[in-house]
Length: 348
Image 1: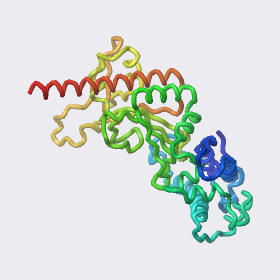
Image 2: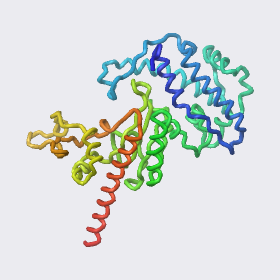
Image 3: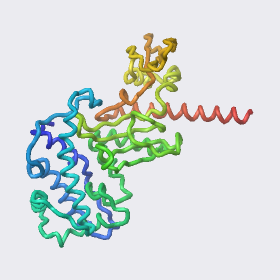
Image 4: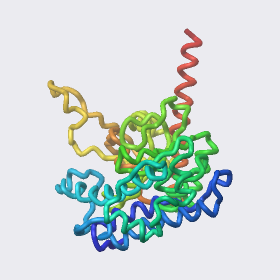
């Protein structure tokens, strides 16, 4: 998508992350009142996109990080400029949330003009759903900002199914649910630029709650999806591979041809970077490379940080099938490993 300015790129994130309207049929305000509030929030984000100068005094030329490592782009000021606009929107939303709770809010002229465009001129008579979302038990800014009316509804699934590819995402999701995987939503938008991230994790691997993401400290099989407007391709999801690739590369020969093809395609080939031996002062330690042979060709594969290779910006049915097979392969290895440990303990 072509943006006229940087601010439009940021506003697009709010538009994309606003899920389809799904009310709480048992809420203390009517479905119609919930829909009225939803339309207002949707209008707010569209207004930020169409008329960003209502929110800020000047605009920046559009730009975005082309890769997944921001520092390699050499523009540290870019993220600062992006945050200026998102901060303006977030402060407005926070003040709206506080006003819904009855807290005194001092609006500036610009904010009053924005609210007026939304049809809010009488602050003493706010829409019923506005007050309800601000004051119901365990109310929070994220649910208010993205109209998450029903606390039990999987809104993030709807968001990422739409952004990544509805049919294929649902196919993968349904398989994971059928296998006992659990959905984990990250709604803490104040602690991260990645608003409303989604993780599916197989709980048999660990009792710990997934921290989100697919690059570091992975303890469960599954997938993780997020949206970061700083990047040229803001929506991304990755395969969660517990504890690196070493276990699965060592079991390469037992994998199906489809899984072997998948692993060869997405695993980094050793390029001699020597990251794996950087702490070796003797120079005697061997590289962590794992050699595999596939279709008569030998590959030196790196077992480290698989999240950087097993990541995508969309999903189709072919990829869904590959992910299902790879997840099944990893889960099967874990099950066999546990059974062996139990047998050893029993024999002892």
